[in-house]
Image (cartoon, rainbow, N blue to C red; front, side, top):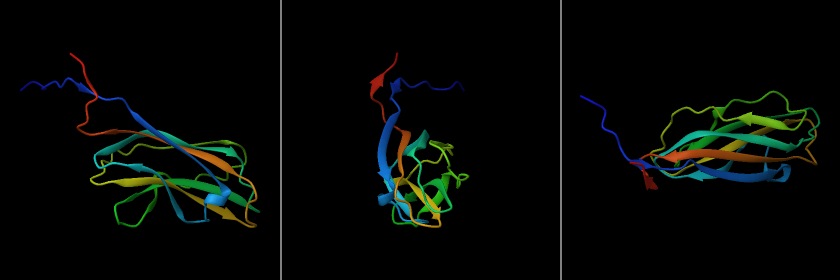
Length: 137
C-alpha cells in the first residue's frame, strides 16, 4: 500500500524568553515556555548572554513539566559543564509529543556565593501535530 500524501503544511513555531539571575533559584525548575497539547519540540537552545557569577560554578539543564506532574530537569539537555563564557546549551530533540499543555524550562545550579550578574535566553522551536497553516499541492 503506498504512503498517503497530505497537503497540509505548517511553519515551525519559535518561542523565546529572556531571564536573569534574579529570576532563578538554584536547583529549581523554572518554567519558561508554554507549549500546547500535540506539540513536538524540534530544536532550540539556552543562550547564556552574560555569565552568571556565582562563587564557584554555574550549570544549566533544559527540562519540561507535563500538566500537573513533577518537572523533569533534563528532558532536552543534561546539566552542562560549568559555563565560564557566554555560550549555548542545545536542545536535543526527543520526539516526545505532549498529550496536554505543558512547559519547557531551565534548571540553573549555582555553587558558592549567590550571583550578582547573569542573563540568558531560552528559545524553543516546535510543531503541533495535526495543525496545518497552508496547503502544498
